[in-house]
Length: 258
Picture (tube, rainbow, N blue to C red):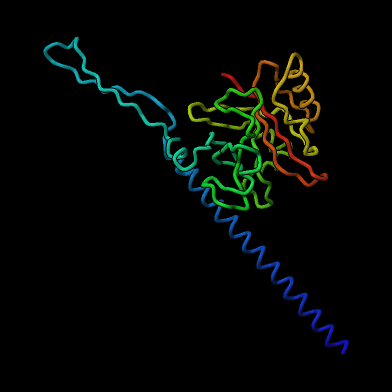
């Protein structure tokens, strides 16, 4: 009788583990499919020019060369196709030597895009999304962008690479392109901290902003000699980190103005 129960227990354990394995494989396939979708979007972006310009085509008249007939062609903003797919589109985020090459959206709250992809379909990976309190277009003093952590490197999984100083030294810049301007940011602080509002502040009075920047610099796990002042705009990337309970990895970068 005992052998019978032991056999039943082993069979139950086998089927339980097998079902977990199948479930994990389904989830992994879903994640891989989502990543391929975003890679296709990234390819589409790279194939288009993001220089919005007016190109004259001049036809000279032989009789009176001083009279020039010009035909102006205005290029359509290549981001139009992304707006057509999702009116919440806010720009494109890219970091060299990572998988981070994604469209950024902004919803009416900070929960909608946790489980919706760029096409507003249910998706375990969600989207890369801007804090709903932000305006975008380079207007905000502090722009915050969120993304899920994944151990296979999708979405914001590769931000974990910045916990290695060598990788940071080789890849200090973040590129965020809004519909009209490419903005370059240089990382000045990296830290793992509890998920709280301390590092997500947006509105400042008096000396609050300078004090906020000083606090961010002091939190960094690496001493970074990147200047940042109250006259600068900053970008923060946020994802989960399990080194501490309910932890988040924060990466703060200052806009570089040429």
